[in-house]
Image (tube, rainbow, N blue to C red; front, side, top):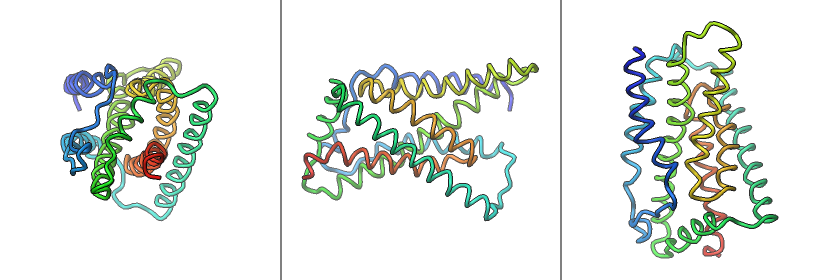
Length: 235
């Protein structure tokens, strides 16, 4: 793939998809969710994620036939990653209890809780689940696959070991920081949580070579987090 095309594509994705979340000051709950109706807000994200993922899957020199060992590896790293995310979640909750929840985090939780409607409750959770699954896939493709792989491709050609190490540190750190910064609207604890989770999910992608394992883990983690946010109103 030509670097000129990659650079143009990276610039477009960076400007229109990666940068905007960094400057969001307050997360808005979609009006359709506030009304308890099914939301199709996930469709644009899903479409973009499929296109970006297809691009790298097409270029990847991986065997289409997965061995039994490959499936075991995916299961192992999926389980390990999920365990890491839950430990991170517990750590952040403990820190919030000790130091107090930030105002941004409290505002977001309050906004989401107030949007929870008891009728029709099933449709509300179904809409959230579908949007969360598409969102998890979108973020895994964007932050764990597209962003680092494109940067590596653009910075390819470095010969010395020291420069290769510097490039690796720069790319991996940038992927973590941009993902963490995208969660700043929820406060400092959310930023720290996102940074630690980004490291675990990126490692999962590297170990499995696929965004799908991370997507499933990311989705279940988000749903569990949602339960804790809505627990006071669920009863």
